[in-house]
Length: 486
Image (cartoon, rainbow, N blue to C red; front, top):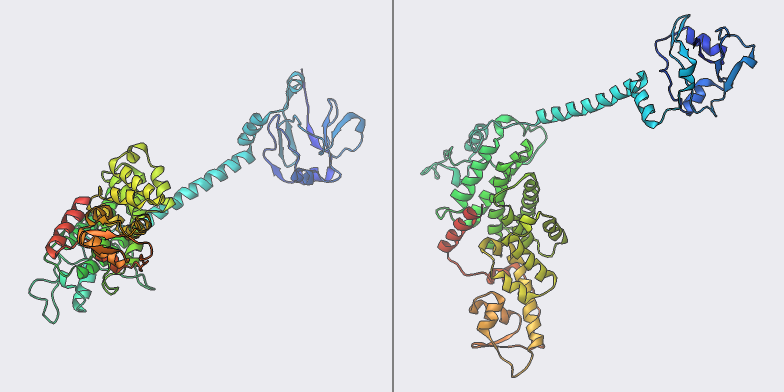
């Protein structure tokens, strides 16, 4: 048995407004109606919902016969099983629903409501809106990727800059053709000229593809700077070498940032840059500020280390363990550096380099100078370059500790043994003792807590505690350290 059930709003004026418009699709069968302020506003203060019983005529304007209607207030209505209503001007079509089908219908749960919502017109519109938003985001990301410039310059220095610097006599002597250095306008050697760093300025386009070098050329440039110039004995003095290489490496990183370079080439460039800056911090320690500024060098070194460690997250790299250890040794006492290492995978934490760096860091945190200096003797040269700025305060603490622990007139301590503890040669150990007021007589040291003076520990003193090397030894160490590390 089928009955002409219908759903209507008890508001004649509203029906007149609805019949004058085209309502293609109102509701699906058995839709859960939720009570919301917008729904109440739709019904109005005088409105109501009713279900006409079978046999009543369908005339929305009829106001009589309330005893034949079952009214439901919007405040108390939880769910209403209605039928599909298709209204086109004054034409109204109803779907026939059996009584058993209507009575057997239960209020929908949240899952059914969600399904009905997504299959409804409004739900489809909402879903299409979400899909449109996601699509727009993907398009914006794609446009951002497409807007990233990609370099096309296959030489270490762009042709336009090379001609400009050559005409303005701004070539570095390391970039000139041999035997033209004394000419009024020296000629540029294309195989040796390197793009110099320039700050962004208003009206200057730094994203031209012809002025940017692709990653492979950037890596070739860094190899030329570090291996052929910094590690060479033909380019002197080394302070000038540092200034030239430092500026050109900065230009390389600038091109990498503009092009958002990543991957193996980026890691290789950063590894060589870190080795160079670490070595420079050791070799030029104590130099005048006009030749070497340790603060500027430290700033760029920290930036390179941070970028390098972030690049290691992309996958496995050959020298990752060594540079994770270098970062920890350079930042002794930093809780962030320790936490970063402790969060690394087990295969990296258990490597010999990282385990030794963690032991040194623990001794530093425990204020144990004897153990720290003993562990420092197991470090290789580049690791000593990384940790050397922490060694002078550690040696000062050791002398202060021994001055109180061995303070006696009749107590003499062997200088040779003290030099081994300080990780210094005998002559340097004796010089350090004299700086802090510790008496040295021949091969013996007399500690006294009253004679110990806390001298100002500056970079010049740190320089005095380095191993005395001549230029040839320095050049050999530069080649083995910078080339062998990366």
